[in-house]
Image (cartoon, rainbow, N blue to C red):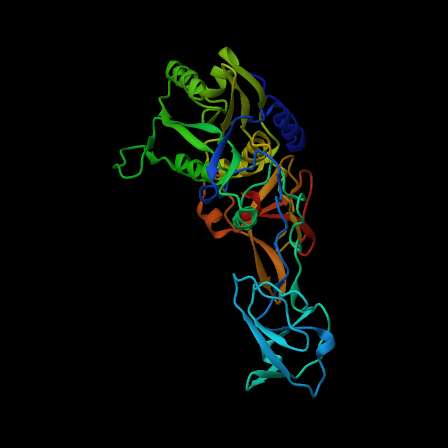
Length: 404
């Protein structure tokens, strides 16, 4: 059988993202449960945030025109946070605390470290200017302004901002339902003894963690028997339960690689063999209308292809604002002397070498090795048909960026 040509990474991504169905189903969640979810609508500020001018420091509120270097100002009021202050009496100061509302008539706040307080009055040991140390009403958000847009991933800062709008619930995109299917009679779950020729099922647990990071719900996780009939039955069953199927292994050219054969015979195979290293034997298609990624069987290949190929697809399905990761341009700390027809994603990390920042590559880049990915903090890109000299710039993707 003639092998399919290798598809360039950009061409493959364009094809995949064009095929990605955007999820329209939504759900309402308590704000406390929304971290990591994707906003399903825009949110405007229903009122000014903050709702009133307030103090940025602990100190004293006064009129700037009442200040003089040798003048003592009587303290006429004390304004704790959460209280409604009375208007400031001219020629006086009010004790005020961080977050407290500025009284009418005051136009500046002097921090307490710049004040000498004695016998109910204060003397100021610093220059005083109008508007200092005051957070103005609507400084964060003006009433009616756009606070967050549809497609935003809710992180800690977004949760805080939504809370500042007074929202107890938010509308989010429903999680994609994903089926994970591992292939290989040699696979054994952790906790069980290994027999002759058996290995532990690494890929299932890598994918479980990656899908959790991606905001997906795993609805099925099984190991396929190495037969054509069992593979077809399980794939068709998974298609009725999931929005997306992800398999590991079974997409190469061996006699026991049944996933690709089933897709070709009774499903749809629209992509196979990428110009990517590791991860060349990646397949994409559909079973009974349900999209399926057939990832390679090697553990590092599963990690790399998920991060660089599957993750942008999932982000597109979620309606995310940003689909592609943003890389950093950093100097390489290693050489590549032999160009490849495939784009290589090197397990790497940022280190200081002789006082200079460099991207160092793990010496073991085998597709069957995960320990190098644990050592690494991200992936460095070696473009196809290219060599690389230490010190030259390369694109580096931190894992945190790839999973954001």
